[in-house]
Image 1: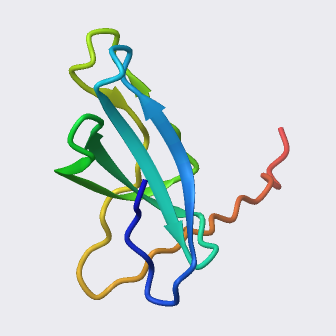
Image 2 (image 1 turned 180 degrees about the vertical axis):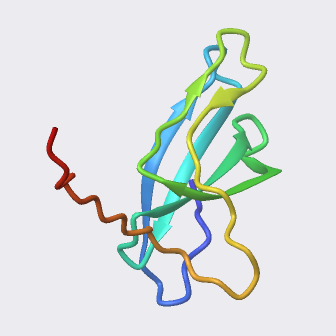
Length: 99
């Protein structure tokens, strides 16, 4: 399977999941050692990627529906223009009130 390379040349195949009929697969790649993944869907017979190109995926796998019509996966919302991908820190303080 030929995979397009990342800018610096390092790409890892992060997931590979075939539909039950074996005709279609979804594969994930991550570049430069990143946890961020991109999923693509490929027709097995033609060895061609379909137009699906899913981004903003992190720590996810893919599970096909039994009929092969689609698959389940998790992703993050696409960040607004001009912002960066990062987690949000939340600070929680214990209550100091007494009853």
